[in-house]
Image (tube, rainbow, N blue to C red; front, side, top):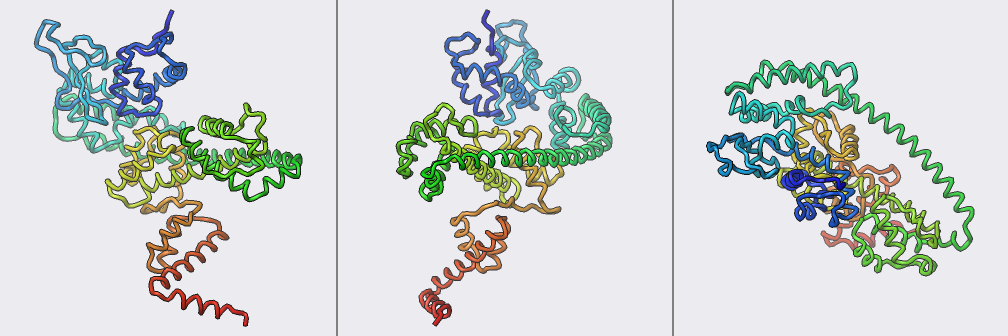
Length: 510
């Protein structure tokens, strides 16, 4: 018997919720959802990949969708006056006529739809169902009052409904967490059951104060856990590097003289870096092969590695984040190992740069709302940016204000991004915000620094604000910056030739 993967009501709910839960996988399967109301595991139109995506992600999408809706404050519900079913409106999800109409709105787009009470109970969040009950049974204006309360105290929904909040709270403090939730729930419920204009500030104050203390304890526990994980990861990384070095040494020992000469040559290393950079960009296969034609291949590799094999390796890296090329037995294994090592290093650097830029756009730089929106939109277009849910970018617009208010990075973010921001926040000064510093710098970036600075003191200050490199590299960079600025000043003043002549005479040994 065929199993239903997605019912018509679930299908319509996901389509309506998609603007708020934009994830790449849901966007990819959306055309299938639009064309086929009911999706079964035996449907002949269902591809293997789409079937697997739906089986893996269906529940998660429905949960995310349930959090994307709220009751419409100005008209949370209405009762149809007619006793005739043909006069009733239809639920937007199950399409059944409903006499008791609940009006919900998608937070991300303000789109309003009408749903019946059963679909509210089936698809909507605990928060919305809670407000539905109070609005229907006690106070028609409860939603308006709740919006006013949460606007003043945005931590209230987190206390009441976010079961994942304070994930690392010490076990000894969990009873206090339950007491805070119970007290807050009782206070808010009493406030909402009767129409009133003033907020329950005095009644809520003790619970909000205790919650701030719990947040601080959770943040400290999280920081301790991050530090412990960093130690474990560093040990694992050290072990992996030792093993990789041992394998590298063994491979080097087995190489022929010709292979050693090739791998040590400048043309081979340049080719390796160029191909690795294309793979790390994670473009489509067609674009990758077009760009590959512009890269000069060493003569010794032409009969050993072709564009098809490189395309397979690029596709493998896009899918798994590493290159093994186990199917390509005729490709030299040293080349596969070299390409994997360089590509992973470039991809890791690219990811760190993107995380630095994302942090600076949201927190590190003093940007107005329009500038922040434009910068985030640009970062979202990269491959790294496309892997992050759309809701994260909405959070980033107000993240600086959230952090300034003493709140943590949202728990709903992907773990890797939350960890990256946590590491950068750990090195922030006690007051104010500074950019995350990049661990490398390009000549183009140095050129911009020179052209934007009026003197070397300002130039040095601007460099140290944005970059941090090893002492050896930094000494070379600062020396080059000083000379570049002097030469630029000479060019602008028209004394470049005279300066060069005098320098040559000063440095002359005669």
